Length: 416
Image 1 (tube, rainbow, N blue to C red):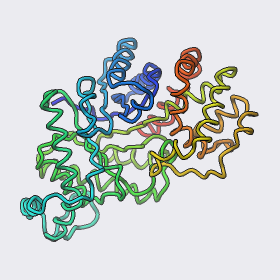
Image 2 (image 1 turned 120 degrees about the vertical axis):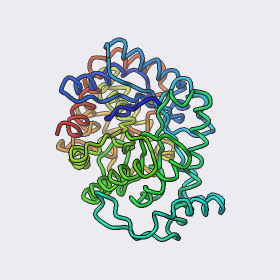
Image 3 (image 1 turned 180 degrees about the vertical axis):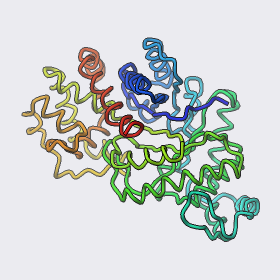
Image 4 (image 1 turned 120 degrees about the horizontal axis):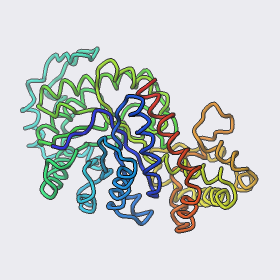
């Protein structure tokens, strides 16, 4: 089985221009003593909007690695795929994020639920998991209720996994099971039985992405009770360690934090947990590279600034269209968005200050940042003019991209 490194970070690059700048952050981290594997990811939805195909992500990753002489591991993620869209990703990807959120909450067949509960009946009663503060008092009925909520989803993950394995070979890819895009967070106890179901399906999952308490809005800081998150994160680490031994799951199974970009409030708790336990981590940073591109264009001035203003105007004018697909992972106060007329008076520095995630800067506007995060379709519609502007302003943009990943994400997570 292809092994995922202890620390890995998913990096989205929607327009396929920043692979080298992203990799530069990983090189800086390695030079500073921490090896982190880049995992380039791009979802099916993003490919459709930008009119690209999965092989383009592999080509970008390979080119960046060759150019830099990178000797560490790296991967290409088939991001949030299901049976309906996985085939286009199989050849180019070696990391598959199995998204089964649509099946969560829907019950499997009654006989399957009963069989699952019977198979794991030995866990009923008082269960003390090392590292979890509370003792669980588990009833057979609880096991059945958890199975009703999650078993069908894990069965679907098994179907996707076996479909990929049949075409690619089980030894040639890494599997992640994603439960983060669901209505409610999973408790550590639910996580235990989800992992039991994953083992039953013989899915060699190396990462699992649960939904945590709190809001993980796109590209902005965590909103919620940080202390509660820290408890959940630590409990989940303990449950994973227990489940690996109990169910024979891969020894390197680790937590994955999706929509993890810019969740500055929880980086210190994560770092403390990793240091205390020696656990690994996969963090997905998704679309913030695109925001650094927009900021870089604005700072470049001239046509770059004009483009940045036009993209904002287009996103604001098509607010419902841009925000609709991301409604559950953004929280925008429309009354705090600047008008197009106001933005058209801004200098490049003012635009970048409003957009870049510096909470100490009074000009920072989290509402504008979220709107532009989901408004990349407007940039894509600019076509060749937009891509040419990215290429022409490479030096300015690349510095921002590298700084964003290394200074704002890697340092507080792994160096702190």
